[in-house]
Amino acid sequence: SAVGQIVPISGDDQLSGPISMGMSFPFYGNTFNTVYVCTNGFLSFTDVGAPYSNQPLPNPGAPPNLVAPFWDDLNVTGGAAIYYQVVDGKLVVQWNAVPHYGTPAGGPYTFQVILKNDGRVIVQLQSLNGNTTGASLGIESPDETKGLEVFRNPGGGFPATPHVVEFYPPPQAPDRLDCASAIPLACNGSVSRDPAADGAANQPSYGCSSDP
Image (cartoon, rainbow, N blue to C red):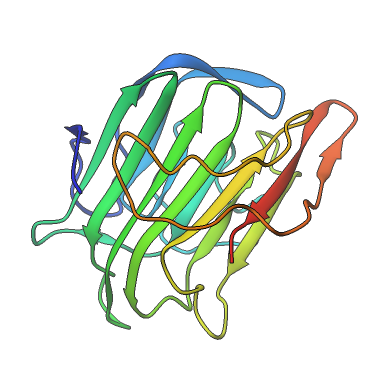
């Protein structure tokens, strides 16, 4: 469902201005109060433009400070919209019924990111229709040398929806995923995959869990 304020961007390859998160969000050793939202299925804590071609993560060619729930060449048109809401110490951003740009045809896609003030990032994929073989889901550090990539251009497409992925910094551990978000989505199950860590001496490592 579409709840909250509309991010004032539409069309192809657009990036919003800074949006207040209503909290201080820790990410790879830095703290941010605002976020930029892109039509192409990602957000960043810095102004990075609106690249439509997804890259491996981590990668110097990808935007820094990246949270990418579904990075692909998307087009916010035809009734599609992006919403955001700040509630109970978290920011929720939802791409709602967004189609793919041009060919191959795909969509509409509905998915969201939840940023929690303890540093956790939860991605909820509600409905991914049509082609999903050219998208990425992952995060990347400010210096573009660290990150976690969950999916990128999967030959068989993204997993069946609904599907939930959680990124968590130490000493967090995955818990039963919080599905009662500000923008409700149906989701299922608790996390089941063992976390894989990635990090450096001066940057927190992140684990990742994905429900089946």
